[in-house]
Length: 134
Image 1 (cartoon, rainbow, N blue to C red):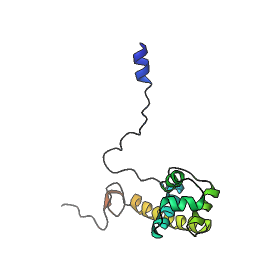
Image 2 (tube, helix red, strand yellow):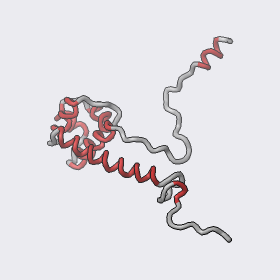
Image 3 (tube, rainbow, N blue to C red):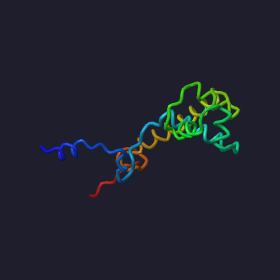
Image 4 (cartoon, rainbow, N blue to C red):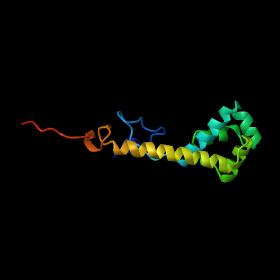
């Protein structure tokens, strides 16, 4: 095998592959996504900028942005500081994230029980009676 062929065989893409065509498989929501959504939603509801909230929390704007987007798994200290910068306790943020997790999990369960066709009623999506041709 040539050096060129060996190098080509070991290429690892730096960007993720594009998503497959068709409906995406349902996955469990990640805690970091839920917490980040709560922080962003609360910050925007208060009409505050990312920089303002990050400065008040004494963390970098870039890091808070990554936490809000679910790209970073923040420590409890960082989450508490971000929450406090928004006038919330860590318990408030976690309770809001828990409520969202329950809502999404319930929706996911309903989606999975709808069956392969996506219609209510289980596999095949049929409910009620079935009439057979004579």
